[in-house]
Length: 150
Image (tube, rainbow, N blue to C red; front, side):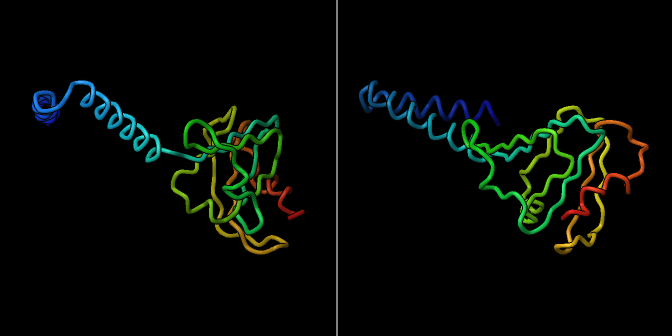
């Protein structure tokens, strides 16, 4: 398929060069490549939450009033990112949970995480994700102490 597409592109290029000036064809091809690159970067954009912590774990809570997509800074070229330093409890807006391109990237992650069912907080119901950067066999209830203040 790729060879067929390249052959068609070559034939179109040769036909365009025969009909128009080479410089005009070159400008159109460069503009087409730039548009294609912008489309590729736009379609593969993502939102990344970088977490750096010295704790054995961190908890991500999705509920109303948390950090929204507007709190994330732009990164090259269309990505967004937010760096969180040494927090045990991270509160994100519940709309971010449905976003398919949001990634949580722990700095030193052990590869273990768990998602709770909806739990009751003082300010309402929310979902909790616990990520371990230390002992994976630790008691999960111990890590939910940061949610008591929410």
